[in-house]
Amino acid sequence: MSPGDDRFGDAPYEGPLLAVTDIKTYFETDRGLVRSVDGVSLTLERGKTIGIVGESGSGKTVLARSIMGLLPKRGVVRDGSVKFEGQEFIGIKPKDMRAFWGAQMSMIFQDPMTSLNPVMKVGNQITESIRQHLDVSRSFANELAENLLESVRIPEPRKRLSEYPHQLSGGMRQRVCIAVALACGPKLLFADEPTTALDVTVQAQVLDLMAAQQRERFMAMVLVTHDLGVVAGRADDIAVMYAGRIVEKAPTKTLFANMKMPYTEALLSSIPKLDDKSHTRLATIPGRPPDLVHPPKGCKFAPRCAYVQDKCHEEEPPLTDAGGGHQYRCWFPVGTPEGAAALEKNRKAGAAAASALTVEAEA
Ligand SMILES: Nc1ncnc2c1ncn2[C@@H]1O[C@H](COP(=O)(O)OP(=O)(O)OP(=O)(O)O)[C@@H](O)[C@H]1O
Ligand SMILES: [Mg+2]
Image (cartoon, rainbow, N blue to C red; front, side, top):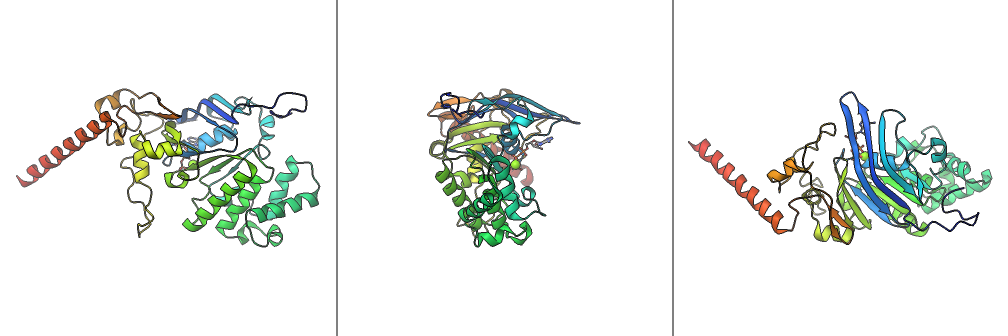
């Protein structure tokens, strides 16, 4: 019996669809413990979308896999709580977890070729999942698969069912992955950089398609991306990750109107501008993310931050609640008098250092 199932007279579950509390996922390596996800909490209601945004290596995929229970068996230290419709996933037997995959929650991966079987026809890949979870005949599953391909706007769906993944374009393959993920009508869909491998126009089409399916099915979605621009108009809430932690979280409008974390500001300024002819990133954030085996003592972003002060290297800022679901970790937040003073102080110090260098060079 699954949670929320009221066959035996239980009241339907009324809490959030997903409640993640202080989860930690560490990997044991020769170098020491890699703290990939280090105390993340979030909730997601039915039908809503949360965007998880952060640079490469910030822990987005490990977070998604930790929630879905898709982690290696050995060398993983896990802590915290992941509740799906009130059912605790941490510590659950793999056999019991399997019942949730596909039917209750599913995942679309970054590279469609890694999740599709190259030697299996498209149709069979969809019907396999349907027949595993739903007690239906082969012909009904085939019909369902054809309808699914049609709903993800694949032309000539019947013909495509008997083709292999390599016969389809990248965009079509990603649509097949979406069809596979939707096959059993999951309540929650994880999309891990679902469009990064696609070109810009196809990216927008695939994201729009996912949004349309989501609305139609009242499905919740965790949309993982390194690009704040991708989630801007698509997520209800955004969580910004850095070095395994959420450093800012807010409803999307609040985040864009009133971001507090210098890291979020830096991510925003690294979005490629549409009118930029070269279509390359205008700015990347200088410096590199910290070593997750030996992270810095204070704020993890301090070594790269334009607002940094001595305190930031000493003490890690706690998660501050700004109200209205907005939280952030910063001692000198963007848009505050303390933040403005810190930025100005660093600007003056930078200018003084630059002019000292010039004097030195001229002497
Ligand atoms: N099995 C593993 N063993 C050791 N370290 C790992 C393992 N899997 C991930 N990591 C480390 O955990 C950190 C977070 O990785 P993760 O894949 O979640 O990043 P990401 O935010 O998804 O990055 P990207 O945008 O490149 O996909 C990285 O430092 C990575 O090297
Ligand atoms: Mg990733």
